[in-house]
Image (cartoon, rainbow, N blue to C red; front, side):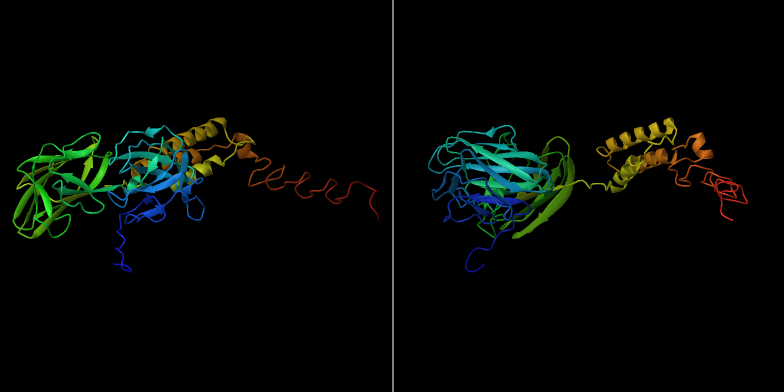
Length: 411
């Protein structure tokens, strides 16, 4: 507890906003946004101008009980450039609702009609390229309850399995024993199974679903994920087996009152992660964390490209063939920046561009008599005498008299 208040829950990386009245309670782990929260550079978020008002209808929870009326309003959030997952929650406990939105002035999304007590959750992915996410809201009332924004690389989701009436751990999504998979929801079971709720020790572990053989499916973007499973029973022993994405990751066993965990890293290639559950078939909780691909440091190649671009042939000192070859190598190297995936590929591109630089060939006359601008001889004459006269006398007169002529000098 902090000053008699509930301790703030860490919901992980990202930005979370609870929209509502100035007096309404704020959902744990969220920032308050009212209709008068105007964007400033100091805060880095807010409406472009005052929105239409707020309401608090008292339920069903701190996040959804209240909202901002945001028709024709724009919400701004300063972000580093990159790709982000955005979730918008909209609805009202006492009223029907329809809210549409745009991300970065893109296509209008949402707009599903919800009845009193129903809430729509919209999820979309957007690329920010100007340092700021812009969200436009429209609708007859355009109620906005909550906004969550998280970098794609920080994606994670948690599921709490149990009965329809059991409490759901804060920050988790509920998976009841009757929640079958649907494309609209994006997760669920392949069949109805049994459930138990033991009442303790906590909201995740107190309840679970159970069957001898069933599947849980969740739609995710392709990539690598860390999968963390919690399985056990407060009053009975447990021995459950798991196959994740076709890979048998083994069994977890635990005595009564104990809860075993299993953590595996798997790769999804078909847009859906599937877990087959067998044995005693208990599962209490599941956590998924996206594992970003390690990004190669391309600085060396970028610097070499800039070095190559800085080489000029305005004075015509290089052969046309070798200079053209360098220009072609630069184009190839720049294109490779978008497709290089391994250190080996990077090494090949570095070597190819460096070879093109090294093969720049001076024209014949430049090799024999470097002209104006050559680093070894910026003058116009022979290498060992850039003047206009004889080697021993750079003046214009005879060797013994560097003046301009006989009889013209003072005796």
